[in-house]
Length: 363
Image (cartoon, rainbow, N blue to C red; front, side, top):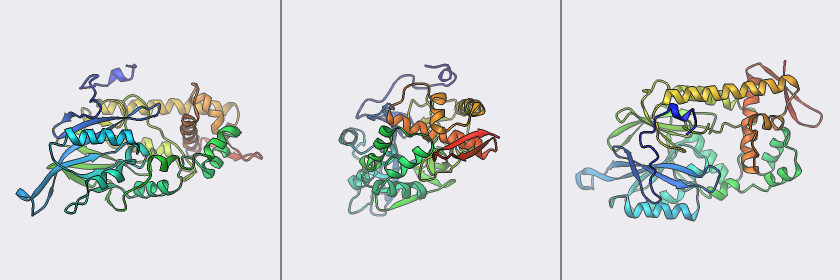
């Protein structure tokens, strides 16, 4: 546990749910942990006790479950879900699937889960923000910020000109649809401030920006619990990137403004993150994230004061460890986000040099 983590409280210690099993973290809220084939090797998913109105059902309601987030589409993940269905549902169906945002580890199996649990009497529907729904539909049918010619040109314009890396990025046109091969054809729209009734309790949607187009976190005041998705993570900082689909976004500023929207919540709120362990200390963690990005911005500022820098020039400043290509694409997006925050904030000027590369310098 690092020094920052020591300032947080992990109410379940080091206990993790076993593969194919669940662990209750709040009344009616179960924790699922699934493996990912990346350096970030897991994702947390949530299974919530639920019910829906049905005049033909005993008592006028169908009892069942809501799934929050899905994992990427691969056979190992489906097998883990099937194990959960066989042992954890108490003989009741999945009624709906809520997705916090459009990244593959969150939405990859939404189409399969919705189809798996749709019956002649009940449609298991996807619930998600409209922005992320349409972004996922585009991504599953083409590319959006993860690979292909457009991404290669964007990274090259920010200084990543190594021919081997650029060729590999061009070849990743199927990166997103490889993990999200399809998206359900219809959905229920989630919006900031909307209340979703789950299992007799109200969960309020809180939108967030900078990490995904329109990320939705869910807060239950009755349980004093926040399903934070990727907006607030306990051990690592959320990836905040600029990509080719929105090449001049101010993602970092949007992210920092977004996490401050959680400050009105109780400081002892139980936070259920998508990566890492459930924790308490929400206000402390938000302060840590602000400190982290303030320090990174200062490093970027210092580097660009010495000489004009591209995002590629900034990589060894922000990420001194060795990066593989997968990590490099995320790191490039982060570097651009920090440069843009200073540029939009009036601290930098940006020039497009004769070599077609954007460089940033102090005024």
